[in-house]
Image (cartoon, rainbow, N blue to C red; front, side, top):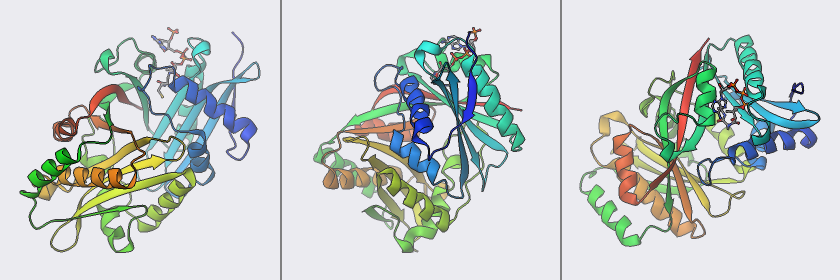
Length: 340
Ligand SMILES: CC(C)(COP(=O)(O)OP(=O)(O)OC[C@H]1O[C@@H](n2cnc3c(N)ncnc32)[C@H](O)[C@@H]1OP(=O)(O)O)[C@@H](O)C(=O)NCCC(=O)NCCS
């Protein structure tokens, strides 16, 4: 077996950065079509060149005989969750089962531990039909062999657009009967100034309010300056967001949903978060914001043909909403965790 050399990647050096991303991309695309949702080269470049204050991101290339065969990635949250690190390891298909993935993982764990991180988290995708735990699939097998437990199982679903306008109208009317006194507001792009404080107050709790399984997670720091940094970075990445909130009678943001499109994947959109504040649940606000946001997306972006969403398998409420909209399952995403 040839020796693998592990080298930190400089996001400003395309000679190293592009092959590092390419190894990640072809490892992700080795799964059957549609199962994974890899980030595109220019999105990752923009994210790593302009990291902001929320997190530190580090890439490592595993080089064998002059070729990058392994892509390693580390995300170290800086403002919250400072005991945790997110790790990613990808090995190109023709270099697997030679220990390169394990060597990269050991390196990432070492760096994470040097940064004081004791909770290590990683994700992996596999086909929907391979079942909840993905037994026998590369990612889950590798995770198990390296001491990582499946802490949360998510399902990837896709929806072909447009959804019939009549169905959206029917669902909106049905929800409206239950959310009298709340106002819906939709827009494309950055969060309007007057909503920004309320937006970060609510969105920062998504990580702990959505089902988390055994994943160790604390709420994100709620900070408008950090929101503005993230929005500036999204623009650099070529992304546009479509957003809907529900406001209570006092004008406070109590529910939200957001969808992102990217110039690097024409025709596709990705559902990001959806959350209703716990004390106002039961008013169909989850359905209401999703339907209103789809109406906005379909009105402004008739070019979008496919919407992708991820939900915790156990998130019965959100899955029921997605079923009614016509989403169908295609893949699974496992969230794995190991404590040092
Ligand atoms: C998962 C992945 C990184 C493994 O890379 P790798 O270089 O093949 O891993 P290693 O050779 O170090 O494997 C270590 C052990 O994991 C287990 N394992 C890895 N792949 C496996 C597979 N396809 N089937 C069964 N066991 C597997 C084995 O126990 C293996 O030891 P062995 O070969 O001595 O039996 C690679 O398949 C990949 O890139 N997959 C897509 C991305 C992903 O899911 N990454 C993991 C989460 S971030």
